[in-house]
Image (tube, rainbow over all chains, first blue to last red):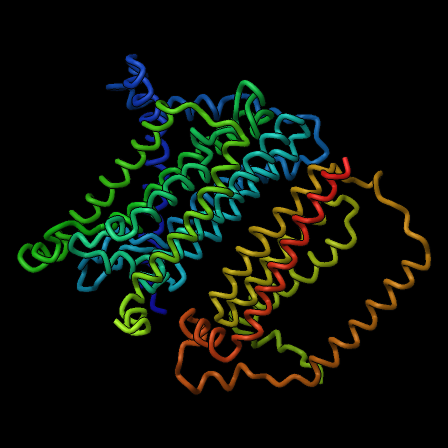
Length: 350
Length: 179
């Protein structure tokens, strides 16, 4: 392994990390602006132009707050909870292809931290581990409301993971690869998976809402019943980490949706751009296109949050177990039948 | 034959293996010895993660990630769930009679003997796979082998899981009917 390779990968990783943090930061600003717009208000407009410095002011405020510890026998786990939530929220970005490649300093630079051939499974692994941050934090708070919030969040995430995984299987049957880069490459030239797997996309989108604990599935932090959910006892930056992790998760799931179903960095005419204008401009435009798609989905999350009221908990479980899981199994069967239509035709004697 | 590692000339993989093995063993013991059931469960999760690390050292990416998803991501979360909801702690622990403890020790020793016998007699088959030039960790190869050579055991395993699932549903329904 030569040193240029290590430098190249380090730069990619640091840039991806910084971009994820900035996106998560400005998602909080965007959330308040979108909420204000939908409710016919002005929103934050004091710090900076249009309130653009508001996230920094919020961060400063959180840092300078008193660090409060509840009366708990598990101080260590109390600190570990938000740490796990934050690190799992940032880990997924390692396998996402942000663009095809750049040609710089006489070498091709892959715009991806690592291209492992089980990228999608890695994403599921990280998502399933993310539940620990909430569960451990909620339990270590030594507070009934926190525990109830944590149990709600965890059971909801575990239930929707199943439907999410099953909806992915139909997509995998079509692409035949778990590598996110491979899936992106297959969607070149408007061959977006959403046109071939609309049902799979719909199930994945609903499950992504449930996985990130966003409205209409934000029962984990239902103020009227649970004070504040699993982070009731948290203050200062530990609280900030939980909130920040939620926005980072939102950014990552918007990215995964764009990469899996909406062509990732592909745009119509990318091949023409590569041939006539050059590799670098074509791929920079590709990255911009990917971020436009991501921003749209983040906006979509916010749009839904400020439009739809939250479900009741039994409705949530009913939707997850009795509607989405059977629906995704039917989707798998339909995909299988369509893929094997020629063989089935021969078998039936057509 | 007991292989004593040469620490002076160890390469990166051997050092990683030693660290991982240390974490695995320590957390496995802590799982048994810690008094608080939640701490036990968390040590077990760390243990599972280090085992996933061992799989990665053997270049089995798929196995490692599935191990994380299934054991750490699903089974241990349900475990933690049960412990948290039932609020188990040291006070609720039932004092077990001496004969049960004795039985546990004897059966543990027997299992140890069986495991040692297996490890002594098993041949290292990892080496033979290298020569074929096929990527044995890829899911394509794994799927082909599971659904061609080991089709019957694979299907039996799924039937076993289905039966277990139906059994649990039945048990939980029965309790409701009695009330």
